[in-house]
Length: 244
Image (cartoon, rainbow, N blue to C red; front, top):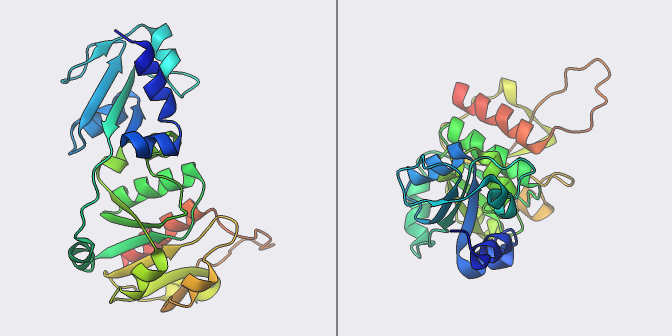
C-alpha cells in the first residue's frame, strides 16, 4: 500500500540535499529498475502497477504511480535504491584505474549531458568516470533516467579534480578548439580524458594540467558552429580512442 510517508520520501529525493541525507535515489521505468536490480545496488522500496519483478513489490494503481513519478508519463514502476558508500581507500582505487582509460568531467552541469556521458562510458567500456565536485549529481532523477540503466555499471566518483589530476601518473587529454586534430593522432589505451563545462569548457586551473590538447575539426562549409555539445564531443573522442 502506498502511504503518505512513501509519497513524502520519494518527492523529497528529487532534491540533492535529501538524497544525501537519506542516502537514497529514485529509478523509474521497467528497464532502469531491472538494470539496478541485477546490479550490486541495494533495493530500498519498489512500487509497480504490475507484479513483474523478482523482488518485493508494493502494487499501486496508475493514479497512485502518478503521485510518486517525476515523469509526465509514468512508466509502470518507481524504485528507490541505496546510494553506495564510497570506500576510503581512494589511493588503491586510483591505482586500479591507471590501467585503462578514465573520463573526467570538469563542472558539467546539465543532467541530460551527464546521463548521456555515463551511457557512453558504458557503451565504450569505460569503467571509471571522475567528476569535479561542481558536476551535477549522478543520482539526480533526470541523470538516472538519461543513463538508461548504465549508472548501474559505471563507477562515478566525485572529487577535487585538480588534486586528482596532479596525482595521476599518465597522460591527461583535454578537448580545446586549438588542440591537435584528433583524427591525426596516435591515441593510447591508457590515460585520462577531460571534458569541460557546457558554457566555459575546461577551466584554466585544469587546463594547466593537460598534457595533450585535442580538437574535433569542423567540416561544414561555413564553419559557423561555435562548439559541440559536451556529450556529442565525448562520443567522438571515445570512439577515436577505442578505434586507435
